[in-house]
Length: 151
Ligand SMILES: O=c1ccn([C@H]2C[C@H](O)[C@@H](COP(=O)(O)OP(=O)(O)OP(=O)(O)O)O2)c(=O)[nH]1
Image (tube, rainbow, N blue to C red; front, top):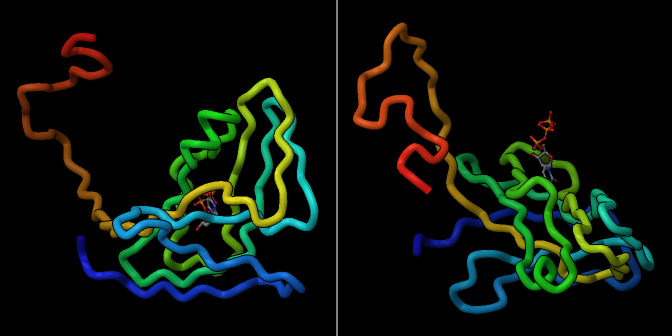
């Protein structure tokens, strides 16, 4: 595992009962859980979606992103998942991180303040320089894809 990077975090609003900051729940966990910074409850009906605030704004170091990913337990037990997985938090984004949650079950899901709704994985990114060419190098695969090697 590479050495940890420092990510600055700012709470975007004050609350009489602040939520704990995200943390790694186990020694080698890849993600830190994000909590719903909502007042009271939010009900997501079947197929409903919402941008759920986390109460946090980040300053990721250049060369890193934060990915917002589903929690498997919520997905399996309640059909609650992230609509745009993985959500991308850019290193230059200073707004509040939101989780785009969708309820893919047939039952309403009642979300409560402080509930852990997603996980955030901080990962290195590489920016590419696009070089336009007329012809690309030939390969064994060529244009085969989308199941060309079999099921
Ligand atoms: O799940 C997400 C995805 C994005 N964002 C924030 C951080 C990210 O840096 C910004 C823009 O995200 P993205 O590039 O995915 O959105 P866009 O629809 O392309 O909007 P924009 O034109 O603002 O880039 O929104 C979140 O808080 N949660």
